[in-house]
Amino acid sequence: MGCLFCSFVDEKKSPKTKKVNNINKDQDQSHQSTDKSKMAPPGEIKKDNARESDETSVANDCDDASKAENNQDSNKSKARTFTFAQMVSATQNFKAGYFLGEGGFGKVYKGILEDSDQVVAIKQLDPDGGQGMREFVVEVLTLSMADHPNLVKLIGYCAEAEQRLLVYEYMPLGSLEDHLQGLHPNRKRLDWNARMKIAAGAARGLAYLHDQMNPPVIYRDLKCSNILLDEDYHAKLSDFGLAKVGPIGDNTHVSTRVMGTYGYCAPDYAMTGQLTFKSDIYSFGVVLLELITGRRAIDNTKAAAEQNLVSWARPLFKDRKKFPQMADPVLEGEYPVRGLYQALAIAAMCLQEQPNMRPLVADIVTALNYLASQIYDPLTRRAQSPLRKGSSRTRSRSKSIDVKNPDEGEG
Ligand SMILES: Nc1ncnc2c1ncn2[C@@H]1O[C@H](COP(=O)(O)OP(=O)(O)OP(=O)(O)O)[C@@H](O)[C@H]1O
Ligand SMILES: [Mg+2]
Image (cartoon, rainbow, N blue to C red; front, side, top):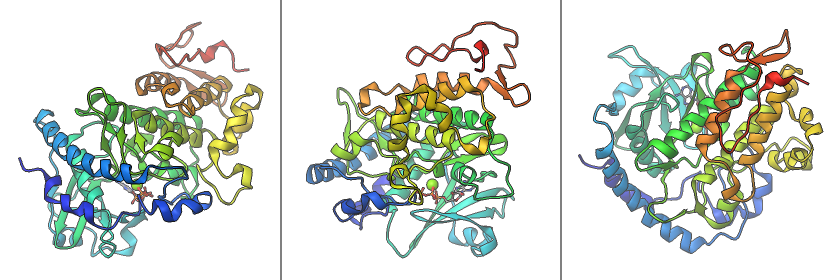
């Protein structure tokens, strides 16, 4: 089967995308970025080397991905192709009322496919900028190979003349960012149980990319706006345009231009351009911290010392007595104290400066599945596993993340 990526590979010479953007130009702006900024954080990035090896790895990605496509189960759903006319019809000509949101690459609309009445989300890449074409191809390729309940499904795409559109399953509860930042005032606030469920779901999606895909994939764009929510707060990762095939053989990292979103980017990756699976673990730590605190990764509306969430949290991580200060005030104290400690401990481990000190995704999944299984009841102010009510002492099976049983007392 022809590789979709190869047919677009010349696009890598097109202007850099909004996500990569302007490593040189933006370096001096890095402290004033917003949550939507896609710039490189500061650091002595080995620009020339990084760029060269990035372009090499693009070709490698293509090759590896083609091999991987053959390796994956043949029953995986393949992306459909749509005509632009079908996209126009599904969105009633991109009607304002169908508008769902806008990101770095274009606008997203709700749509209804004419032939099946299926409700979908359609992302139309900005046709003027000539940007994001490489991401379009990587997105189609990655999602065509992937199949997991915690990854958003790609239904198809449209590549007609200048138009590039991606058609996804529709996620009725929108993004985690929308919920945490209260962008939909009519929606109920996220309670502790929903937050842990979302964290565990996102971790399982990441574990699939790291441990089950062949070849394994580094996501590179884990953030709250890319975690979409299905009914009942079932989390799915979306936006794989920055995904990279992970290091192969004895290699420990992939050299790339620094790409991602400021505030989520691991410091080691930002400084060296050396991308590892542990870069994703750092970003996961930022997301988990946002879930616990309700704060944004970067918030320019706050006082200088509180604008960067991780910098704000680091001194607090050292003193358990300060942990309750970190809980989202929106929760109004309705969380299990031990659960809060445990979740913060996981976030702190993910955010270690040294990448090799960060946990493996499989251990994060085990720990968060456990925390999500402990349903907090605001009436009794206790967290309990529905299956293990009455049990006295249990421990998670996690090896490197030791999560103790909240039944030992809520403090
Ligand atoms: N499959 C989907 N179902 C429902 N809503 C979606 C879907 N995909 C995206 N959206 C909505 O569209 C918004 C914009 O998404 P988009 O991925 O374009 O931007 P972003 O995640 O904010 O930024 P970035 O371009 O960096 O990923 C999301 O925040 C979400 O509210
Ligand atoms: Mg997104």
